[in-house]
Image 1 (cartoon, rainbow over the protein chains, first blue to last red):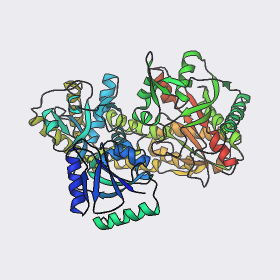
Image 2 (cartoon, each protein chain N blue to C red):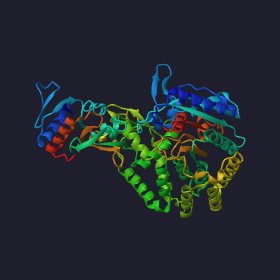
Image 3 (tube, chains in turn red, orange):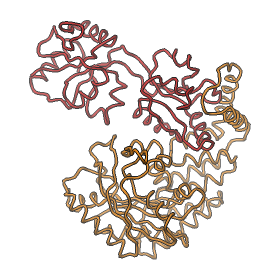
Image 4 (cartoon, chains in turn cyan, green):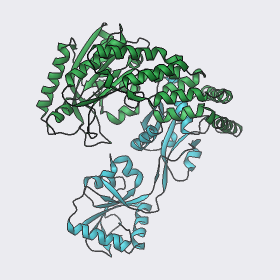
Length: 232
Length: 365
């Protein structure tokens, strides 16, 4: 039985993942043409490369259909309930850095902290008759964060893209989104709240706790971690 | 609730037995819809309920929710069609997502008993607790009690601005933020309050951002003014902060707590009425045969369970089984009826039993 390794199937994340493995003595490559989603692994026997969309990798790990997978730590924490009972982190890979942050209109001169946001939400609800809306696609992470910090009188509204535009379009009062540079925020007249990010994300190599691990695949995993110096 | 091996038929029979007990005590049986309009529940409980309840969509009626609890529909039914005094009992399934505890059931039975009777709140509180204690007797359960009304009265009586009291009252159910606010309004928070104001003034100076969003300039100006006023207000006195801390840390048997609260009430007369209600409740409990001398009371109990419990709160737990949810919980929720009644409020107290947890104890599971 082989160890199935799920890796993002395109773009920078795939290239950086290939580089990261290569630096550690394992060569991953796409088989055949650019369009074919299968690959090859050299430097270790018994590992099969599975190319997937990065957003599907958490689900595949949780279902145990892949043994190992590379994806953003934000996606795993947001998409999987009780994530650490389903997967464990083998290595933080040092790229794909992005912070999940909360941002409000820059014209809100009175709001810079979670304290301020909470007070603004209270007054907003009293005046407008509904809860202050925060647009995001990271519902679980944002809700847990705001709960832990005791923020009330808000609601999350789903936004799967162009989240920074929701405030101007009057479909939300604030946003929670991934940002690496903050330029899009500035262009949309938003500012980041002055607190720790909801989550600091980076590309991470995960091991599935749900996959079927045999003596053979376990041995392959130890060989892999040893070859790559992951110290598992 | 553990996903137990107890057959659903057995749980349903146990629920029927408990419901029959409440009926025999004079409660009127009621049935509630399983599919409820989501709007009211979402407005009441916010994101907490969205994380825990199943929301679905109906083309005619919009967002609908699988019944996450009975309290809201029972209150609505009573406010529309009922008349005081009224006592209701019900049994049926509730549905909860268990994101953080996937081993707990997503669908389980609740049996409830709710009393709408404003004639004597202490007696109504005692009646509900005593009925639960009676029907649960012999299962080796431990009872916990508290009273959010004491803390509310203490906050409402603080010698400070209305705005600060309102901010603290709003966060009674969020202990961490409550604590942060207490610090900010105290002597220790004076520097922080001035820093906040300086920060806002600096923002005002270099503000060149265009105005966007639904939150109006008037709202922003009002908050700036509030921060200015708050910065120049004297802090809440160290003595009052200490009294609040004393109340929050009370955890003893009921008679001991009562005597300590009577001492505190000398310095904080605002709680006198709430303490006297606690005394009357204690007498009413004793009159109903509850062993008050050994009844545990914790002033902070129930602060994190349900936002709208605002008076007496209680729970029954299986001792030595922290893995199990409480077998029963309940309390007074006048505040909930006030929100649902949009101005009209009805004194209400009640609770629920989880029959499958009760059965899992009886079976030694």
